[in-house]
Length: 270
Image (cartoon, helix red, strand yellow):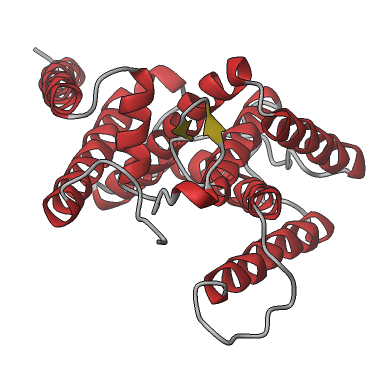
Protein backbone atom coordinates (compact mmCIF):
# COMPACT_ATOMS: atom_id res chain seq x y z
CA UNK A 1 0.00 0.00 0.00
CA UNK A 2 1.45 3.37 -1.04
CA UNK A 3 1.91 6.27 1.35
CA UNK A 4 -1.04 8.20 -0.08
CA UNK A 5 -3.31 5.14 0.11
CA UNK A 6 -2.24 4.54 3.72
CA UNK A 7 -3.01 8.14 4.61
CA UNK A 8 -6.45 7.91 2.99
CA UNK A 9 -7.12 4.66 4.87
CA UNK A 10 -6.22 6.22 8.23
CA UNK A 11 -8.29 9.27 7.41
CA UNK A 12 -11.28 7.07 6.59
CA UNK A 13 -10.93 5.20 9.89
CA UNK A 14 -10.80 8.47 11.85
CA UNK A 15 -13.84 9.76 10.02
CA UNK A 16 -15.87 6.74 11.12
CA UNK A 17 -14.57 6.96 14.70
CA UNK A 18 -15.41 10.65 14.95
CA UNK A 19 -18.79 10.10 13.33
CA UNK A 20 -19.56 7.41 15.91
CA UNK A 21 -18.56 9.71 18.77
CA UNK A 22 -20.65 12.54 17.31
CA UNK A 23 -23.71 10.30 16.98
CA UNK A 24 -23.28 8.94 20.50
CA UNK A 25 -22.95 12.41 22.02
CA UNK A 26 -25.98 13.61 20.10
CA UNK A 27 -28.13 10.68 21.23
CA UNK A 28 -27.12 11.12 24.88
CA UNK A 29 -27.76 14.87 24.71
CA UNK A 30 -31.15 14.40 23.04
CA UNK A 31 -32.13 11.82 25.65
CA UNK A 32 -31.21 14.02 28.63
CA UNK A 33 -32.66 17.34 27.41
CA UNK A 34 -36.32 18.48 27.48
CA UNK A 35 -38.82 16.90 25.09
CA UNK A 36 -39.76 18.34 21.72
CA UNK A 37 -37.86 20.37 19.14
CA UNK A 38 -38.36 23.58 21.10
CA UNK A 39 -37.17 21.76 24.22
CA UNK A 40 -33.93 20.87 22.43
CA UNK A 41 -33.57 24.46 21.22
CA UNK A 42 -34.12 25.64 24.80
CA UNK A 43 -31.32 23.33 25.96
CA UNK A 44 -28.92 24.87 23.44
CA UNK A 45 -29.91 28.37 24.49
CA UNK A 46 -29.59 27.27 28.12
CA UNK A 47 -25.84 26.87 27.57
CA UNK A 48 -25.19 30.38 26.24
CA UNK A 49 -28.00 32.66 27.42
CA UNK A 50 -29.66 33.71 30.68
CA UNK A 51 -33.07 33.10 29.03
CA UNK A 52 -34.83 35.62 31.27
CA UNK A 53 -38.51 35.38 30.24
CA UNK A 54 -39.10 39.14 30.51
CA UNK A 55 -36.27 39.74 28.04
CA UNK A 56 -37.34 37.08 25.56
CA UNK A 57 -39.95 36.92 22.83
CA UNK A 58 -42.80 34.49 23.39
CA UNK A 59 -44.11 31.62 21.29
CA UNK A 60 -47.56 31.13 22.74
CA UNK A 61 -47.07 30.40 26.43
CA UNK A 62 -43.34 29.69 26.27
CA UNK A 63 -40.24 31.81 25.78
CA UNK A 64 -38.00 31.85 22.73
CA UNK A 65 -35.00 29.53 23.03
CA UNK A 66 -32.84 32.56 23.89
CA UNK A 67 -33.35 36.13 25.00
CA UNK A 68 -34.05 38.82 22.41
CA UNK A 69 -30.40 39.90 22.28
CA UNK A 70 -28.94 36.41 21.86
CA UNK A 71 -31.69 35.45 19.42
CA UNK A 72 -30.80 38.46 17.29
CA UNK A 73 -27.09 37.69 17.52
CA UNK A 74 -27.31 34.09 16.36
CA UNK A 75 -30.02 34.73 13.77
CA UNK A 76 -27.94 37.61 12.43
CA UNK A 77 -24.85 35.41 12.35
CA UNK A 78 -26.69 32.68 10.45
CA UNK A 79 -28.04 35.26 8.00
CA UNK A 80 -24.53 36.63 7.50
CA UNK A 81 -23.04 33.17 6.95
CA UNK A 82 -25.73 32.32 4.39
CA UNK A 83 -25.06 35.63 2.63
CA UNK A 84 -21.33 34.89 2.46
CA UNK A 85 -21.93 31.30 1.38
CA UNK A 86 -24.09 32.43 -1.53
CA UNK A 87 -21.25 34.71 -2.64
CA UNK A 88 -18.84 31.81 -3.02
CA UNK A 89 -15.45 31.10 -1.48
CA UNK A 90 -14.45 34.70 -0.87
CA UNK A 91 -11.73 34.93 1.75
CA UNK A 92 -10.81 38.59 1.96
CA UNK A 93 -11.83 40.54 5.06
CA UNK A 94 -14.41 43.31 4.51
CA UNK A 95 -12.98 46.65 3.34
CA UNK A 96 -12.53 49.52 5.78
CA UNK A 97 -15.87 51.16 4.96
CA UNK A 98 -17.73 47.93 5.70
CA UNK A 99 -15.67 47.32 8.85
CA UNK A 100 -16.63 50.79 10.10
CA UNK A 101 -20.33 50.00 9.67
CA UNK A 102 -19.90 46.59 11.31
CA UNK A 103 -17.89 48.19 14.12
CA UNK A 104 -20.71 50.68 14.76
CA UNK A 105 -23.19 47.79 14.91
CA UNK A 106 -20.96 46.00 17.42
CA UNK A 107 -20.59 49.18 19.50
CA UNK A 108 -24.37 49.64 19.58
CA UNK A 109 -24.67 46.04 20.83
CA UNK A 110 -22.23 46.80 23.65
CA UNK A 111 -23.97 50.05 24.61
CA UNK A 112 -27.42 48.50 24.59
CA UNK A 113 -26.13 45.55 26.61
CA UNK A 114 -24.56 47.79 29.24
CA UNK A 115 -27.73 49.86 29.43
CA UNK A 116 -29.81 46.70 29.75
CA UNK A 117 -27.59 45.46 32.60
CA UNK A 118 -27.86 48.78 34.42
CA UNK A 119 -31.63 48.35 34.43
CA UNK A 120 -31.09 45.58 36.98
CA UNK A 121 -29.41 47.99 39.40
CA UNK A 122 -31.35 50.43 41.62
CA UNK A 123 -30.96 54.21 41.44
CA UNK A 124 -29.09 54.23 38.13
CA UNK A 125 -29.73 56.92 35.52
CA UNK A 126 -30.21 55.23 32.15
CA UNK A 127 -29.57 56.68 28.70
CA UNK A 128 -32.85 55.15 27.57
CA UNK A 129 -35.22 52.30 28.41
CA UNK A 130 -33.85 49.18 26.76
CA UNK A 131 -36.60 47.03 25.28
CA UNK A 132 -36.74 43.68 23.54
CA UNK A 133 -36.81 45.32 20.11
CA UNK A 134 -33.58 47.24 20.85
CA UNK A 135 -32.01 44.02 22.10
CA UNK A 136 -33.07 42.23 18.93
CA UNK A 137 -31.84 44.98 16.60
CA UNK A 138 -28.45 45.41 18.25
CA UNK A 139 -28.04 41.65 18.65
CA UNK A 140 -28.71 41.13 14.95
CA UNK A 141 -26.14 43.78 14.08
CA UNK A 142 -23.55 42.05 16.25
CA UNK A 143 -24.36 38.75 14.55
CA UNK A 144 -23.69 40.32 11.15
CA UNK A 145 -20.35 41.63 12.41
CA UNK A 146 -19.33 38.22 13.77
CA UNK A 147 -20.19 36.40 10.55
CA UNK A 148 -18.36 39.02 8.45
CA UNK A 149 -15.13 38.21 10.29
CA UNK A 150 -15.68 34.52 10.96
CA UNK A 151 -16.42 33.51 7.36
CA UNK A 152 -13.22 34.84 5.73
CA UNK A 153 -11.22 33.57 8.72
CA UNK A 154 -12.68 30.11 8.15
CA UNK A 155 -12.01 30.24 4.40
CA UNK A 156 -8.43 31.43 4.85
CA UNK A 157 -7.72 28.80 7.50
CA UNK A 158 -9.20 25.81 5.71
CA UNK A 159 -8.72 26.11 1.98
CA UNK A 160 -5.69 26.04 -0.27
CA UNK A 161 -7.23 28.50 -2.70
CA UNK A 162 -9.95 31.12 -2.33
CA UNK A 163 -11.20 34.21 -4.10
CA UNK A 164 -9.25 37.26 -3.02
CA UNK A 165 -12.44 39.29 -2.72
CA UNK A 166 -14.87 40.20 0.03
CA UNK A 167 -18.56 39.36 0.02
CA UNK A 168 -19.03 42.87 1.44
CA UNK A 169 -16.70 44.61 -0.96
CA UNK A 170 -19.27 47.05 -2.37
CA UNK A 171 -21.94 49.35 -1.00
CA UNK A 172 -24.54 47.33 -2.85
CA UNK A 173 -23.55 44.16 -1.03
CA UNK A 174 -23.41 45.88 2.36
CA UNK A 175 -26.79 47.52 1.89
CA UNK A 176 -28.27 44.26 0.62
CA UNK A 177 -27.17 42.46 3.78
CA UNK A 178 -28.56 45.23 6.00
CA UNK A 179 -31.89 45.13 4.14
CA UNK A 180 -32.06 41.36 4.62
CA UNK A 181 -31.31 41.85 8.33
CA UNK A 182 -34.07 44.46 8.56
CA UNK A 183 -36.51 42.02 6.99
CA UNK A 184 -35.47 39.33 9.49
CA UNK A 185 -35.97 41.73 12.39
CA UNK A 186 -39.41 42.64 11.06
CA UNK A 187 -40.40 38.98 10.87
CA UNK A 188 -39.40 38.42 14.50
CA UNK A 189 -41.14 41.58 15.72
CA UNK A 190 -44.31 40.54 13.91
CA UNK A 191 -44.37 37.65 16.43
CA UNK A 192 -46.28 35.25 14.23
CA UNK A 193 -45.98 31.88 16.06
CA UNK A 194 -45.80 30.01 12.74
CA UNK A 195 -42.63 31.97 11.92
CA UNK A 196 -41.19 32.28 15.42
CA UNK A 197 -41.17 28.49 15.84
CA UNK A 198 -38.65 27.81 13.03
CA UNK A 199 -36.70 30.96 13.89
CA UNK A 200 -36.27 29.74 17.46
CA UNK A 201 -34.89 26.46 16.11
CA UNK A 202 -32.66 28.35 13.68
CA UNK A 203 -31.21 30.56 16.41
CA UNK A 204 -30.30 27.46 18.42
CA UNK A 205 -28.76 25.87 15.33
CA UNK A 206 -26.73 29.07 14.93
CA UNK A 207 -25.06 28.43 18.29
CA UNK A 208 -23.90 24.99 17.15
CA UNK A 209 -22.82 26.23 13.72
CA UNK A 210 -20.68 29.06 15.08
CA UNK A 211 -19.05 26.89 17.75
CA UNK A 212 -18.42 24.12 15.22
CA UNK A 213 -16.72 26.53 12.83
CA UNK A 214 -14.53 28.04 15.54
CA UNK A 215 -13.47 24.71 17.02
CA UNK A 216 -12.81 23.18 13.60
CA UNK A 217 -10.47 26.10 12.88
CA UNK A 218 -8.73 25.59 16.22
CA UNK A 219 -8.30 21.87 15.45
CA UNK A 220 -6.82 22.59 12.02
CA UNK A 221 -4.36 25.08 13.51
CA UNK A 222 -3.34 22.70 16.30
CA UNK A 223 -2.89 19.89 13.77
CA UNK A 224 -0.90 22.30 11.56
CA UNK A 225 -3.10 21.59 8.57
CA UNK A 226 -3.95 25.14 7.61
CA UNK A 227 -4.68 25.66 3.91
CA UNK A 228 -4.67 21.90 3.31
CA UNK A 229 -8.13 21.44 1.85
CA UNK A 230 -9.30 22.10 -1.66
CA UNK A 231 -12.91 20.87 -1.45
CA UNK A 232 -15.67 21.13 1.13
CA UNK A 233 -16.04 17.36 1.45
CA UNK A 234 -12.45 17.18 2.66
CA UNK A 235 -13.49 19.10 5.79
CA UNK A 236 -15.32 16.13 7.28
CA UNK A 237 -12.75 15.46 10.03
CA UNK A 238 -12.29 19.12 11.13
CA UNK A 239 -16.05 19.72 11.13
CA UNK A 240 -16.73 16.52 13.06
CA UNK A 241 -14.14 17.51 15.65
CA UNK A 242 -15.66 20.98 15.84
CA UNK A 243 -19.14 19.53 16.29
CA UNK A 244 -18.00 17.11 19.00
CA UNK A 245 -16.24 19.84 21.00
CA UNK A 246 -19.25 22.16 20.56
CA UNK A 247 -21.66 19.52 21.86
CA UNK A 248 -19.38 18.71 24.79
CA UNK A 249 -19.25 22.39 25.71
CA UNK A 250 -23.02 22.78 25.45
CA UNK A 251 -23.60 19.56 27.40
CA UNK A 252 -21.19 20.44 30.22
CA UNK A 253 -22.63 23.93 30.66
CA UNK A 254 -26.17 22.52 30.56
CA UNK A 255 -25.26 20.02 33.27
CA UNK A 256 -23.55 22.55 35.53
CA UNK A 257 -26.36 25.07 35.19
CA UNK A 258 -29.04 22.44 35.83
CA UNK A 259 -27.20 21.19 38.93
CA UNK A 260 -27.01 24.81 40.13
CA UNK A 261 -30.59 25.89 39.38
CA UNK A 262 -32.54 22.61 39.25
CA UNK A 263 -34.60 23.89 36.32
CA UNK A 264 -34.40 24.22 32.54
CA UNK A 265 -36.07 27.63 32.75
CA UNK A 266 -34.39 30.99 32.50
CA UNK A 267 -33.24 33.13 35.38
CA UNK A 268 -36.02 34.98 37.15
CA UNK A 269 -35.83 38.73 37.67
CA UNK A 270 -38.50 38.70 40.38
